[in-house]
Image (cartoon, rainbow, N blue to C red; front, side, top):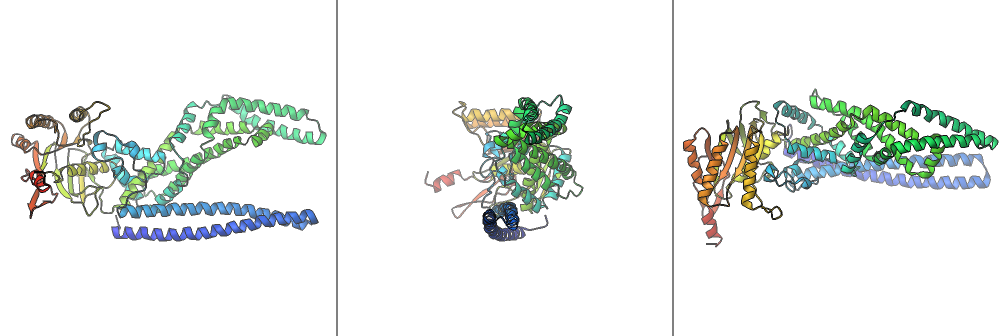
Length: 596
């Protein structure tokens, strides 16, 4: 990154000041236009009133000008209102990013709906308050939130794919203005939800195209032409016969397409605003400079086609939505077969684009994902994009820290794990073992999402991630703490048989049994794990397990975190060391708190 945190602070402060001023100026403009609009309306009524009393043609023409001015000011007022809302949304985003920068919280959704009490999702705080999802999330649509969720659930494991995303994010993270424009525009319409997507997908799957398309495409112009001729004939002669025949024929066709398109009209007619939003968002992304990046180029190409095509569908959806005006559609169907025109347009669009809509919707989510990771990268200029090894099994880090910890609290560590094996991590209570495990897991997950990581340098082999850190019992499922832990360990053992290479994070297992049983079970499990192509970080208080290193020096290595007692105070440095922890603190803390 080519900026510092101080520059970021200034950048967002300037944004806040500029948008605050812009919103204030637009508010004054809108108030002035509202006053001017009222004056034009009064002038129109007054001139029309005077015309009826004086019958002066000049007054009639002036009243038309007054009406034209009034209508123009309605449009202008709507335009400036929309512009003000865009600036308000940009102001909201700038304030949010400034708050995030100063560790005051992120106003975007925290992903609580995705909270899963399984695997690394619960162990690494992936979803919910103060989660990794919440740290990254800048999505504004349901599609985007789902895409971010899926990337957390299924991180990438192919070197080429990760590098492609790294390249796209590095380029896109320099386009704050376009990301800001996307988010501000999406926030104009907050009613997009899973119901809208379901309705669109149902329409795509259930819609049955016309078998006699050519006939309806011709008759929708021929019959209305005869109907208009019949109308003038009726007005001229007073003979309703020809007009009545045309109206009956028109309604026969309307009833046919209504029967055929009833479900489609119901699904599409309510989607106009959401489709318009999608079209606008795609249009914004077409302005992103790709800089020869493959992912961005592909997404821009898709966005260009999708913007135009979905805009057409939005127009058709709006036509269908207008059918709710019974008086207007009754007249239009009687003379022009309005529903037939809607049905033919919808049928033509479906035939041309039915195979693409699902992909376009997925692209909306993918762009939202890029927005989230790009802003994350932009807001963390000291984070680095990892290097990736296609072969072997390794994780090497320089000054790695936990991305959810503030810079003031963070203590970084460096290490080099160059091959499969078990790393026994010992240390006293609160010395940093669990945080270290989560630090490695979170950064590996970020790396496999194409994001920069909280380190000065990071080199890794893409691998699956499994963990057993937090355990909770369940009264509803009649599961004890001990059984829940065993189930988690069994799941890991089963998964690594087919999903490898893997990083496995284990924190103090078998706490629910006696010390002898705990040692024996832990030792046997460790010996099972060293036979697999995995890197295992195994945190434990049981120093006896470190004796396994003597028998398996090529497979088991000991690391530790130490604590010291100085002047009756417990001190932690949270620094990872080679070797076995020597110091204890449980008895000291119990005495200090008066427990013993």
